[in-house]
Length: 315
Ligand code: SAM
Ligand code: SF4
Image (cartoon, rainbow, N blue to C red; front, top):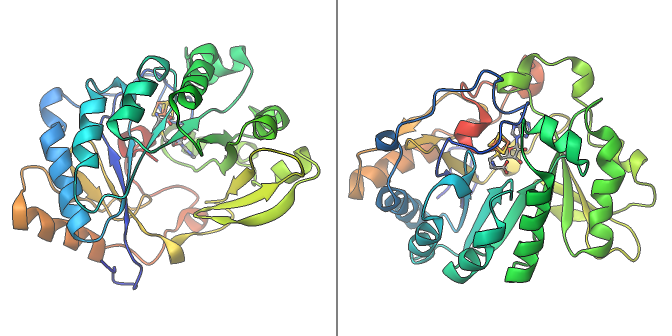
């Protein structure tokens, strides 16, 4: 379906939980957050029905996200259910990978096509500090298990934070030297706990080009600009939500774990879907697509208007 600006909407980011086993400093407040109760989050059947309604309106790609999607029990079952929805051509997941190793093979067999793994540093102490207790060893085991399970074109996503992990950029980029993975560096967006962080934390993605000499421009891949170094198996990507806007080419809608459709990541507008089914649900999704704003105002306003944390929306 086309939105009001004539953009083709074919990508759904579906949050399956607002819970997470990590507490990344930029994503979750230090004091913790009130989590949704089990009764407030959509069941597997409801999530699948939402996907089906979106697919009937032209969505072809679905990404599971969270919170951490792997804390939702029985995820392979949900993967099988969504993969069986007519019209869904690609099913992907964004994960911190710390819980991935034991279930990677099962998820692959269930029909999950691709993975994005979030990894902001390769220093174990810094990883534990940034995630407030997460294990780098577990995340790397998850990444290795993904490869062994047969996942290809896995992407590693790293959020750039000046004075926090910028020194890690060369080592993270090096992952693309030997492995056929794209390592993508994302500008930190002022949302939730990091909205009030000092300006120096928000660094432009071009700093990666200074830190990793020899990169040549390759091509665009969705929201990422890909760069390549001769002889490397994978690529380095830059994602610049702050210094560039992707709004013109935005093909996404988002649904939160409690069943609210967000036409734009950075707007507080939400269309409730919980409790709806059939034609009523489809009409609500249509309303959500039609309500996509022309663009966000992140740069001008200095903070996101999302009205929720990233752990609730899923990125
Ligand atoms: N827990 C999973 C993970 O970390 O991959 C999925 C959910 S997480 C909210 C999705 C992505 O959003 C992660 O890659 C995370 O680094 C990113 N993210 C969270 N807060 C962000 C922010 N303020 N700016 C940019 N990216 C952010
Ligand atoms: Fe959890 Fe992902 Fe947020 Fe980190 S970024 S706290 S792993 S939801």
